[in-house]
Length: 362
Image 1 (cartoon, rainbow, N blue to C red):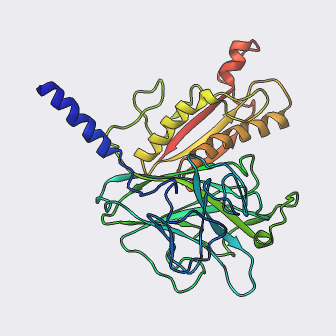
Image 2 (image 1 turned 135 degrees about the vertical axis):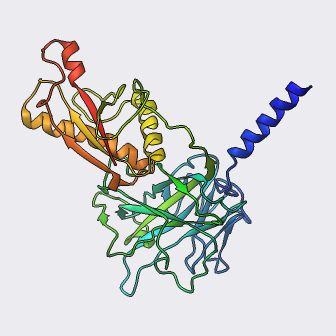
């Protein structure tokens, strides 16, 4: 009986530990099945979600028989990341008088605890009818909600703003994961999602090959939002990388099990478990920075290998950034075939020399 009770308590504790503090995280619930774009001025979007400004975010759901359906709607065509619904917001709009922005705001189930770590995550996607793409999106965790009297840029800076180095990437038009580990001050109870930068700070790109004809999005970037999470996480045990029981700054480590396509810089699936460990290392050691260096074997020209090694280091950096690591903490270098670990032209030697190295700085 005692053993059974202990197991039961453990399950309950683990479930509580992993509780998502966001109500209706996937926008599955709705007050009324959406028929078209929203014109609701009350700020109510869906159960658990409001607009903190006079901007009007939209709901999309498979229940709709109008222009707010899933997968096809007035903003484009997209399946939900998970489930049957998602929300949509203008994150950029060219307008003569001032910036136009829309934001999603949620009251958390419980306030955040001081000095505790929380995993903040959501998925976003540029709608296919958008004629512009932008380089950023962010979130704010605050102890009070905001009720703006206009539809401009949010008056408070983001808690964290993800800024991509390039706008037009291979992942454009795909669901993209936003993730960040937040150290709580205590009392944060509201989560707000959107673009917290004005148009001067926001880099935008006109999509010349877009066939979209939606007039409302002819001068805009519009993001779908799905699967929002705020979850308390632990971080008491220092994470390690494969083969290195203890990590130190100012030492060089070969990042193991990192694989790319031949003569390409796209990461293969077998690389992700080790990269997840690297993310945890940088989340735990919050003051550390990392230098990511790419190296190739001796096959090919210097120019080709220098570029390839830098792109491979950049792919690792992009993974870290997409997982919520601040880009300011990451530096990438490409050495091509200049610094082999071992001499030799056999495949074993070449495989050893094709590598990504890390150096942590504090």
